[in-house]
Image (tube, rainbow, N blue to C red):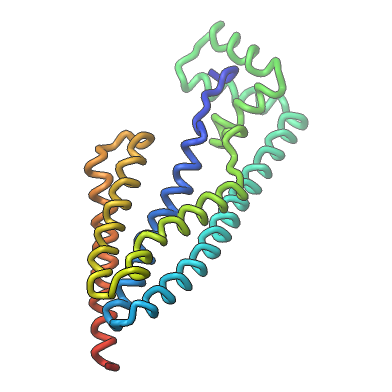
Length: 233
């Protein structure tokens, strides 16, 4: 199993997380924003302006935030990898005993345990991988890519933000708002259902869950915007 590590991130794993993170925030936050503005004005231009400005600012924020987060995780992981390499060089006997303890806990005993330890520690790269995966919990091949994460998250946010904004470009506010909600909810449901290809959850439950979150956000924002609009109107 150590010699043939499985690919736990077939373009899907971490990439899916980044896309869903960006898309979900794009749908929910921008729908909430345009709903709030629409609740306080009848001028669709203000709604579009607010939506586009919010989407641009949030896209940059999401992309940069995810870049910094993933980059920090990678730097920490690389520091732990470097530490394990030093320990294998400086204290091989202690590290060999740790391998023995790890596989003893897995049920290996006697000559079988001796053979496993001897096999795993005969090659430095394999030995390092064992220590990282079993002791530290790091898979060197699965480290994230900060640039890719930033692009996927920001791109998904920007694309998702278009759904709640577009109806206000072509339709008066009173008619655009329900269209915006319906269009966004359909897209949100599809994203929630699609991610079950990897999560193995019920597609109906996953889609409905994301729709409920978007509905709560947009509903509260609309009520707040309407109240503020009436207050200053």
